[in-house]
Length: 309
Image (cartoon, rainbow, N blue to C red; front, side, top):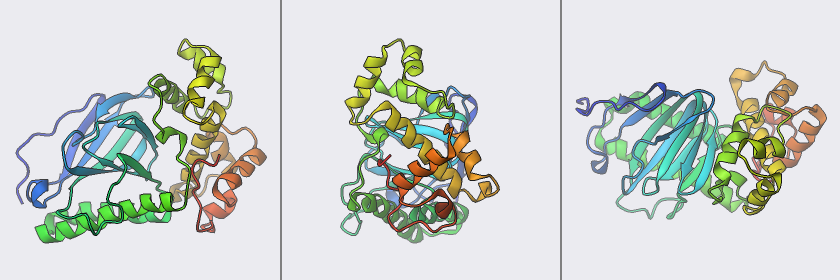
């Protein structure tokens, strides 16, 4: 296979760029595929950048968050991603990425199959995240990394089969959440334009236990009453949003094998909880099991109940 002739395109930010890690055998519409690794160090304040392939027609884009954290903004929805999470978007929707600090994503563009009859969901949402700590999230991450390592020796027919498999797996994961009747998490809702920068500020200060509505409101020159009104418009509250995001970060850390040696209380404190008993109660209420059982892999089948914080 020949390397693509188009040069890598630099992205904004310090040491940022796109790196093609596997060439496409043919244009994606003909069955080939190409992995692009996006690397950036945008500082703690973060910086917006376009996603590779976003705006193209009749494609899906799978994004594996390899390192760091970011917030994807897709068709009015905001989807925070931690290491190990996978995001599926339809590239007909405008999409941008805001990374915080050192961040790496592995992106794979997948063409629409000639027929979508075999897919688990025929009309996927503009954006959906599969959490890396879930069983199907682990399987999807492993499959994407395996595809990257062997793509240079695959035939077009084999690539097409893997396209269908990985896409169906992602859609199955998203469909399973809907089938369980899970409430949409606050950051996936269509939010007023004024709410987006407030959510970014909350994400940046999330680990600070003194984070409060007045501090965020003052940072944006609005009243606390205005801040609460914006959150009510999307069916949540400031405290619910903060608690949900802290719990998600704690859950992801508990599921990370590399953090096995880190005490659970320290994980809770590093994400803004100031009381271990309060964290334990919140975690059990959100995910249906204790943090200890979750870390040991003894969580019930219907865990990851996002939005019940």
